[in-house]
Length: 603
Ligand code: GCB
Image (tube, rainbow, N blue to C red; front, top):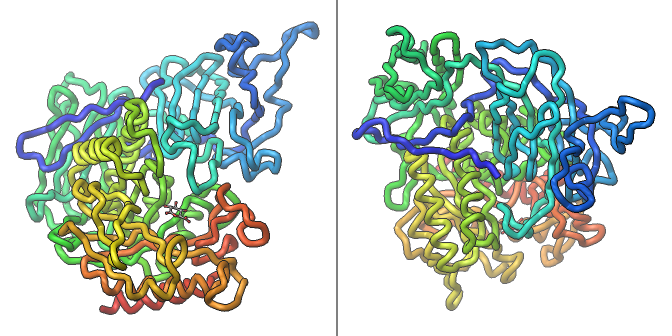
């Protein structure tokens, strides 16, 4: 098992940003020279892992990764990638072939790529995400493995890659295990496959590996951050500096690298601040010798003050919606820029300035689109429900996903909150586990807020108390509560009172009800649009009485696939709590929330 290990480092005593750097993860792969490997891949379904284990259940050295072809008619080779079915990458397998709809297990992926190898360059294979285990082989040899279904990873293949045709094989395994993150029990589809883009990145040996460019948390009018150069050369004065350019701010500075290849900067400047109303992004260019990286970065501040969330120093109310990563254009996982544009355009149309990207890190297209379109983002790792909080290996899996999420997205202005968990049962082990994650997140990025969605509130005489001890760890408390659906009647919700033991901002991170779009009836009839509308009306009335509430992200924008929802003719394996049907058709509740947000925006 190999995790990308991050080592925290501090660049100076007065630095407000704490940060970390991945071993070889190259920041911003989209701006690098790359061979894009998206397209049709050969695939072999392998429920018994026959291509991995021999008949003694030992790792075989003649597995499918060899991509063997019989040299003679008498040779025995019992597989053939070239004649096997094809699947699209990116893409989940469940929605590409009917017989894979419920499949959980191993599928082998293969494709060739051609390269003219240059000796002064480095090469890495990059995967946007593979759910859940990926074992990567190049030219018949194992490169490395990765665990975790929603974060990117890269492996250095400079040694193994050759000029000419290379054979790339990936064993993808999405079977669920109790000691994984997430664990076996979730309310979303376990889409397997290579679900995001794959590329071979090419970059100079001496290259910009990572960077963090943000407004200072402590000093107004100061841009600060760091750049990390890998294999930097000491041969001349020029090679000992990295150049940062932000043309629109007239910034062009050569910053000295220390002996570890790290450059720290603080620059006085007054950028136009990024906000949902004005999502200003600046072109940021970094140059080091032959290497150039371009990015688009917005600058804003985010803080809490008592029960308020301050965006650029002003209290903001988060008019949000929760979103699962399912495509509005086709069945299954979303991954493309178009998917992101449509989902976020819906959120904007609803009147949102905020989205909760549940329950795992969404694709980089999504957070970059949020940057462009001006939506504040809650980003989360899948520490969901009953993970094994007592198990140190499970903790390291969660921490690894946290590190990969923060490493990828730390320059995105849209992201204001990192969420550590969703609806975890209260226990000392869970408090320690999530407390440690929160501490890690703050070490990696001290500029954003920490949150978690909690569903344990005590209920005494009709008063709900926010008293989950996890509240003391987070900056913003997320509360999931399904008044009128899993508990109580919708009509009773409006008068429900809430108290909080913590002087912190609270977000109602989930509430809602299922409705089958087009099913109408009495508001007391479950599954009708009228029932859902009644739940919305009453919950919004309740919310208006929660003085410490600073936002909401009702559950959910669009119906989504879930194996927990079998009710025939109503659910058919869809969670129907969407404001939009699975086809994107608006239900009555859409208009209720829309009107509420329009009014809030005008307040
Ligand atoms: C929740 C979970 C969410 C579920 C939702 C539901 O509390 O956080 O993942 O999908 O409720 O529909 O039950």
